[in-house]
Image 1 (tube, rainbow, N blue to C red):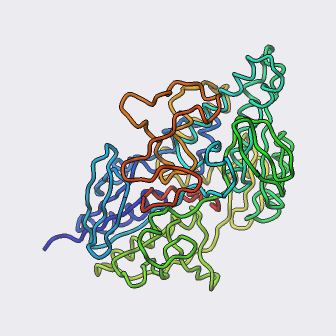
Image 2 (cartoon, rainbow, N blue to C red):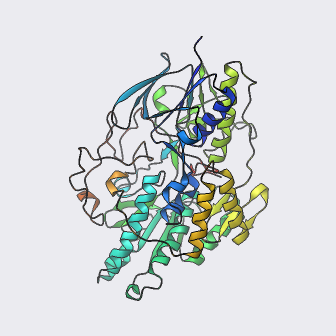
Image 3 (cartoon, helix red, strand yellow):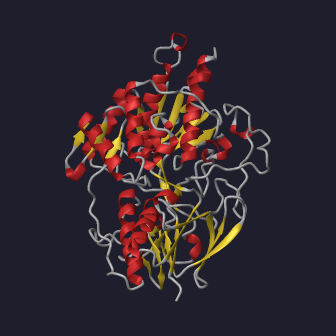
Length: 491
């Protein structure tokens, strides 16, 4: 008799935890396949530290094959799922297609950048959901400061030194907090750069930063940002984006070359392509994480609308704290569906939140205890080290080196602006040029207008990006939710 086959789509917090737990439960008695576009699990909460030059990129990645030795890794993105035929069709990294048959399917496809109908945003803004976007922002910010220092035009200098972040949730708050420290460190102690004054702006239509958190944590974060020099504007957002700046909803035009879009996330478009019941784009599941009417299909993480048993009538938020724990429950229930173990209903209470504000500053409320300052900073870093499934020593070493040595502010130019579009179903992958050997203007400086840059070529079988492009049946990975995924709620 053949061994049961389980296919897991996505290796974010939910998918990775499902694969790891199920592998341990199966003990070699089942075939487990993990489909993911990259060969690593990304610890998304530390991504702002990559953009700020604190951590090297590989520190926040964990090898899938190295940590899941009994799980077959298939590199690719799910294009289509045949529920009746029980097959997953995917496209590999080199354009080749393939098909995976399954007896059980776990959808942990995660989320992508949320798009709003704001003119110019899709063309001129960049998200912050994957490693390529973090590397691009790190290079771009460094480049803008260096270009500002080399110009004699005060207007251009101010524009290049102005960095606008939209969205004061976890991601946006941490990007602005770390960004201000990063750029201040670049200009400090350079006598020829005396006219360079980095300015970070944080915008949100909410009435306070981190509106999803307790008001005390929100107030602490807001005070730290303002003391640091971040221009925090609540009740304000972007009305239009142009190559030369952004028009705010209050009528002010801000000259800038940098627009970071952190307004939240939406479920991966793959969920919509299945024709199953949805809740705001997420697959409806029962408390056991099974899709009603499809007992062989499970869903967890940002792709699933999981009933919140602690709050009847509501669904668990799209956070990493939930995604990580749902992955474990999902693995046990997949095993139970094969007759191994008992079924478990997902139930979890929030254990608190941590927000890293850079330096020794943070805001945290572990187990309901409100902390700020160095104490919160210590708790926050300890939490991340405990939550990471690998690289703890390397991360701690980078933190120590950052505390005693100046940061290396250099631009490597490895990720170009056109390769990380905002409207993409795969933020974990940098877009490739449409022909071998590079795009038609691959080496063009990124300071120029976006209209002069080569447009990204969509992967085979995918619609071209655009502000009004309808999401097709494409797949991405469950990019973590925070302990784990900063699916914009995270923990």
